[in-house]
Length: 191
Image 1 (spheres, helix red, strand yellow):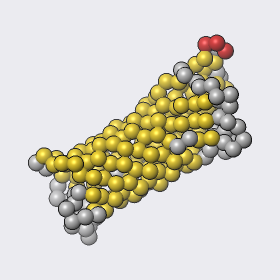
Image 2 (cartoon, rainbow, N blue to C red):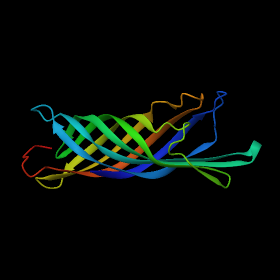
Image 3 (cartoon, rainbow, N blue to C red):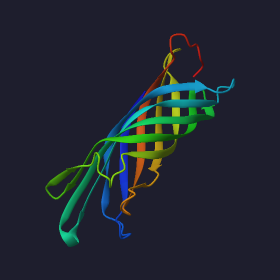
Image 4 (cartoon, one colour):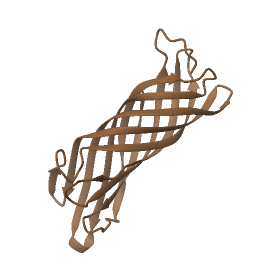
């Protein structure tokens, strides 16, 4: 289980191929929970799977047309990934990790000036995305049954585009979080 902050950036290109360059990143929260399984006897490679709830947001303005705009979206995802133990210093372990997630838009709004639009079901915003993430984490045991984990991940979505228009939107996200690993009651596994 982990919780943290996502600093997201939106890379938007309209149907004429023009980028929206003045979008600013915003910080939102994320939450995840899942299961981790050891793949080898040396306890250096782990397989992870779970559910995620991610919030992404960006804000900007275009002075030439006197516009203010903001995107605020929430996605529910299914994630799979691996953790590879890099090294250990006393009880503190360091990992490299990577994951892929299929995320589905469950809530989203776009604000242009004083008008707010619901993005759920809009063709311009594909309702699911594929998100690739990579990062590092460190883990420290707090008991024989639990460990605390802190980590950083960078991720990018595979292009979101509708089949009707040539508009494209890519989400880029930095995630900083803290979490816990708890051994299940019948599992006497090493972390």
